Image (cartoon, rainbow, N blue to C red; front, side, top):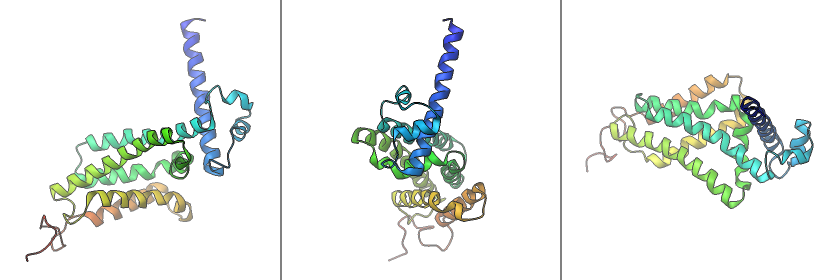
Length: 216
């Protein structure tokens, strides 16, 4: 086999693996991890179950890959936002929008990550947990730096706000189809709502006092 043929074979295998991963994400999202089987994934692809193991050694490995794929993609986008030149409120808006928009392009990956990663075996769960913690760190960094710069209220705890915002945006997975609003508009509205609540304003507790309180 020539080098060109080998390259073509690798590209074909990568493409087929992506198709297998998409099918696994869809099955996990629709049926849940315990309700899904490798036979279900194979049936969706129109292939033999035995052929599936050419791409993944087990259902557990497929679940880890599905959870990792969307998370790594978001981390790449989030790292770029964090490293950018925008001010802290705009960075946070961009992070929040970026968290919601994959529901449109990769909803099965998002739902599987949020709902099914708890079924991963311990070693895999730790690896995925490390990715999730990096997301938390990026959000917390932007919020903490925004507080330090005076953009955000000084009476807020950055870590608590981080978990609150992530929970709010993640919950949109469950209900966003119930509102007749384009997902991009929904993402922008939620981001604006969240950031507006954090902004430091004159006369608001913690806006000017670094300790978050008035005079004794």
